[in-house]
Image 1: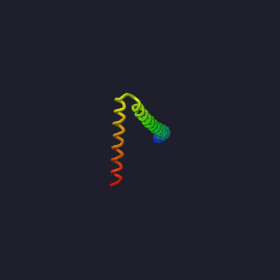
Image 2: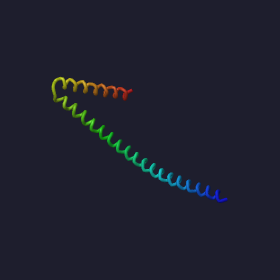
Image 3: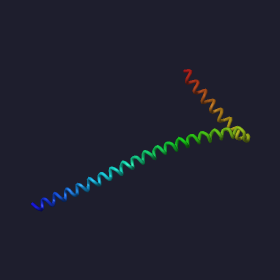
Image 4: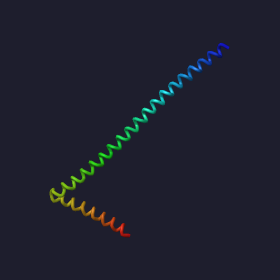
Amino acid sequence: MSELVKVVDSLENKISKLLHKMELLHQANTKLEDELNTLRNDKEKVNDSVSYWEEKYNSLKLADTMFGSSTDKTEAKLKINALIRELDHCITQLSE
């Protein structure tokens, strides 16, 4: 009978250790999930910022081409014509 008590005690001890380890892993998992969510939010903010500054850069680049050399002016005219074509296409679609 003494052997059976030792086996049961050993099993209880191992189960207790496993439950403790499971709790620690659960806490670590929760912490990592929170960190992942924080990093995802930070990434989204950075992507928004990059998009904003890319738009600003393109606007400044377009403005610069309008005041630059003749090749830059040609490029600006081509961009403006492309925008006008896009607007015409949108107006055509709206009128249908």
